[in-house]
Length: 136
Image 1: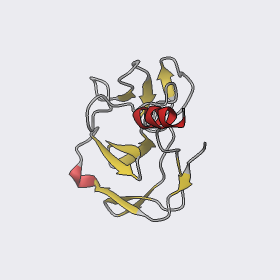
Image 2 (image 1 turned 30 degrees about the vertical axis):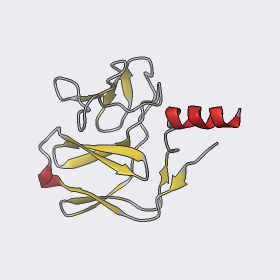
Image 3 (image 1 turned 180 degrees about the vertical axis):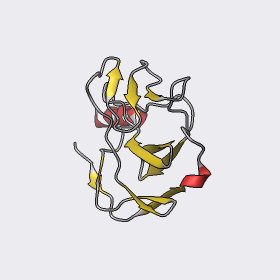
């Protein structure tokens, strides 16, 4: 079942001055999680989904970068992604890319742009297992 949808409105993300360089911020939109990383005076945003396992990348809230703070790192299997384009440069999904999120900038304020596709909502395995038990 595909439950992807279109984001119907613009959503404020953050002011650039709220983040230090190489710092990340998370946002939940209708059960879909995204994150943005500041690099110099720009934000790069992606849906928080590893292309290898389909799971969240971070191991703690707002923690997406490797120890050097230069690459996005998957907490599950260590895959490394470039901040500026989301390309996986090391790990089991090498060559794949993170799903980017379109942002709109107005001076130093960034917004999640409207009219873009959102990924399917994650499956809640517990709820699915309970529903399967009820069907039997």
